[in-house]
Length: 399
Ligand code: GLC
Image (tube, rainbow, N blue to C red; front, side, top):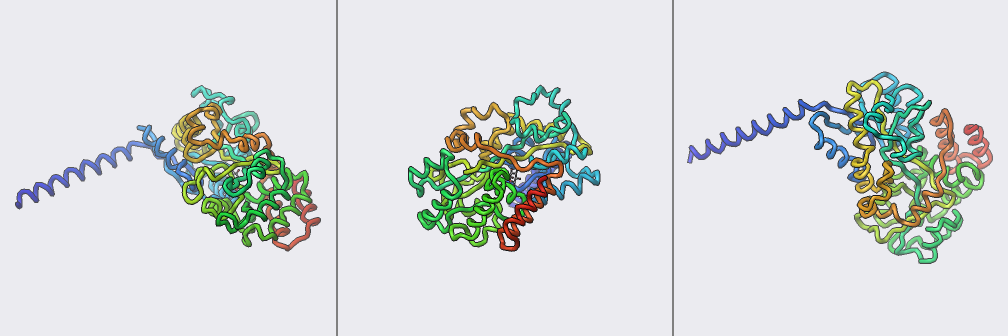
């Protein structure tokens, strides 16, 4: 008996030694590449990292989780990169500020790497690529392109209304009327949810309500009418994407304005079969995230290795099928396996939204302009400033 126990202990010790030795050897052999990117409510980012790491004998990517607030992430990265820090090798950047980072000289140009890897520009989403291009050099490749969408409960909305929404031929007033009349149906407590907190998401929503600032006055008046109505939650002025998707995926709202990722979250109470997709009345704001390499990274080759994988066919397949993102690698847009796993890409309402995209203000000092929009609009919506002062301040900021 004693012999048996000591044999067992010896076996366990040998196995433990082999196991821990194996782990420490492989970890020690691989160079760690640190990737600064946001938290992800879909399984896509983790799967992307795991798949890359499994394929590698040389590098291992570590996820440095950043805030989901784009403006705050911008500031955090700015502080680090402007100090010449090497703490991140690969960084995710919002399309609205990637150009600023490239212009500031924080990023390594990718042209030579791309040339060697035979990755040409037409392979990628053109809008995303343009956002990552500065003075003729390519500084970033797409992690995922984004656009604003209207999600609606197809099991609650009438067929006629669904058709109208999908066509894109409706106004914010039509949306308000529908939100009013369907609120409360099918166990919902709200008609419409969207992003109105004072942060970058507000700029995206203002861009849509105002048709890219062509209808600033009437668009803001619409937004105010929505804010004070009883078909939106009382605390809509604190809503970001997270509050929006929590409401919609849990069956609390009939309509929601959000990005494509929300489709990947329809697994709990509300199922994909209960949901339709439509363009927004005045067009969908273009967004998205890009991957760049910190110029000061101690391992530019390793950082590029990951960017190449993530933006390439395999990486984009994961982002699109696990995260419901629009693929940034164009060939996947018509790939049957992608369309099967992410059927939203083939929906008529989604295709109509792609045809009606609009962009946030283009400015050399984008962050400053967007801050001015956020501060002024939030003040107006919460009752602290009148409409005409708000419009004047915004026009001045966007000049
Ligand atoms: C999404 C978009 C990004 C936008 C942000 C606002 O992440 O991809 O472009 O700035 O939402 O919250």
